Length: 387
Image (tube, rainbow, N blue to C red; front, side, top):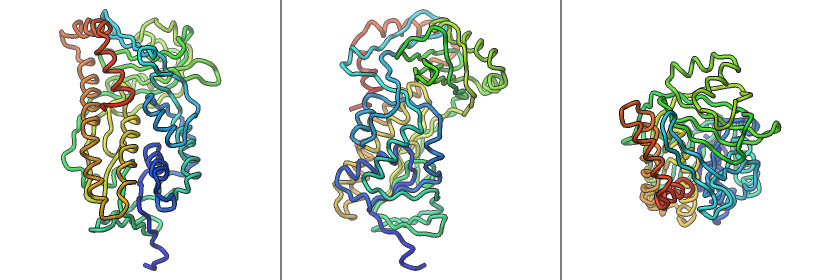
């Protein structure tokens, strides 16, 4: 293959979603030449920007997006989070006032986050290769060679997997769990909305989250309803009115009656996490951990991955220092990743259990609400991770 067909960069990032693009911008802001950073993604930018999914951003993620030149962007602030157990006494309420922040978090459209980060990448001169896929990867002692499906070769000092599974064979010991749940997602409206309040409602089948997301039609909520797979199929088959009634039965009357629902989609829920890395490859974000959506921590954990990796790789001023930087990254991120994975995994399993201890969990929520240090600790974990 001719030399002109081989691109040479310092960092190749596979996956130009929010985590991959944030890493690219943060590297450039820390002194890495944008022209020496390559982002590779299978989707055209317009396709990614059109993605209507809702995503939860913590206060800490807002701070990271500010550093990545990608804030402000269209988003609805969360001032309060109301947590309860369906059919049992007890609830907990987290409020931004306790933490001295403008918001506990935000709800944004995935495409808007991508758009803001793509513009930041352009300003920083990052090379973006899309739509193109990484067909295979060869790791050598002093570089990584990526074979692209358009025939080009990409030679890099380090390859970062931010989405997908190029490095699956290197994942080692993975933590996996099938929750036996399916997430039904949609946007809904209610006739008595509570501005800037998010709800996490635990039911017998799994958590039901309503996240405030204002739209052109006023107050709306991004719905993530976790149910058994058979129930999910029945919910998808219902007409809008019947679906809204079923949602009202599951959630209760705190928002009045649900009045409108968008198109619904569903996806299976599971845990798949592995700290995958070699001397010159490392996985971050969804490539390193896919979590249950309870507490909305997936993207936030990935953005923290990007921030730490950017700091360490920017200090690796020559390619010989890359293996040590990757090893330091794996060690530094271990505690935060493990804590968030354990917390979300436990919440997903324990509160969906139908056993005789469920009334005690409701009472535990009430007790939790009265113990300020515990409430503060959980909120800090959700906003910033384990520090």
